Image (cartoon, rainbow, N blue to C red):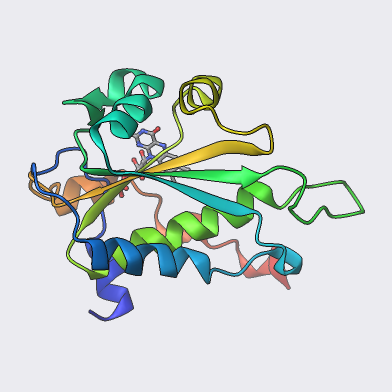
Length: 181
Ligand SMILES: Cc1cc2nc3c(=O)[nH]c(=O)nc-3n(C[C@H](O)[C@H](O)[C@H](O)COP(=O)(O)O)c2cc1C
């Protein structure tokens, strides 16, 4: 599908069919994340694949009200995207760590790859990272930043006009040229 169509069709899916994601599709999604760019090529992102009932349940428990049917939004697959602590590039001028940026690019590439494979996703950050660390027994050098739920949608894509109404217009998104020149 042309990229412009993918970005237009993507939406946050919060209801999934009880149908697993095929292993070859999971591999393609992970590969899209693996090859994502990262600041200074440091690759600080690591992904925990939650595709068993026990792992999905742990992800759901950390995601509070988003937990449903033993998973986050009932998804058959939850990708737990973590930062490998102290490996991201840090900008010397203001000590900004690129960890959130780098891990977000990975999530975005995996999200769009999933979309291209006929799957749907929801990016989830509203979860308790401490609960994830404790319940998964994550080593101290891994810090969970994002979850990405993946599966076949069982909802209908939201009304296009209503979705558009919740976005900011181009005139607001694009900074006037008098500031950018
Ligand atoms: C960084 C990030 C974190 C998000 N966290 C959550 C979340 O915790 N729970 C949720 O339901 N949606 C979450 N979303 C999805 C947004 O709510 C959603 O993208 C937004 O409402 C626009 O809707 P759309 O994705 O259908 O276009 C998150 C999205 C992003 C980019």
